[in-house]
Structure formats: C-alpha cells, structure tokens
Length: 105
Image 1 (tube, rainbow, N blue to C red):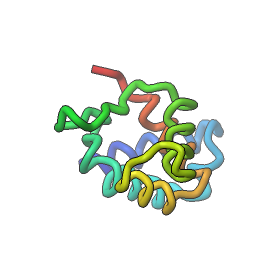
Image 2: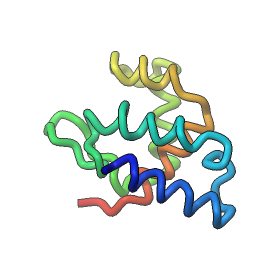
Image 3: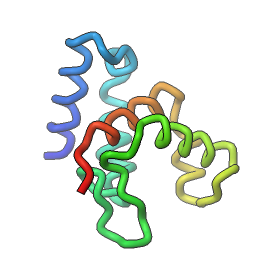
C-alpha cells in the first residue's frame, strides 16, 4: 500500500514539473523508501521504535544533509552508512523531499 502512495506522489510531482529526479528514477526512489527506509522509519515516516527518529515533516535540507553526513562518516550509524552509500545524490534529494512533505505527528 505504501508503494502505491509513494508512486502516486512521485507521478504527481513529475507531472507538475517540480521534481526532475522523479522523472529519471521513480522506481528506484519508491523502492528505496518502501523497502529500505520504511522498515526502520515507518511507512509514513513515523518510526515504530523509540530509538529511531521520525522523518515525517523534517526539513528536506536537514534530511539531505544527514544522509550525506552518514555517507561521509561524519555521522556514525552502521546501517545508515551502508544505506547512504547505496544512494545517488538525486535519490537522497528525492527521499528528503518525500519525507519533508509528510505531516509530522
């Protein structure tokens, strides 16, 4: 169900012309969010575990910068280091934009 919602959101942004990265790799971004991010950070950006941060409603620049910090090892977390090394800059922007667009709880 989450993949459908994310895919619809990506298509809408692409059609509005507001997100060129979505037009280039929507399936990759959808897969990253639904399969890689959601198990820890929740399907709607709200984590189920208290030791995992909620991403919904965070500022997109903050989220993007944190992904870069994990990739460069400036911010330490074994799983996030692995995940961030698998992402392109466009995917990082797309993930940050997606989670920033969600309402915080």
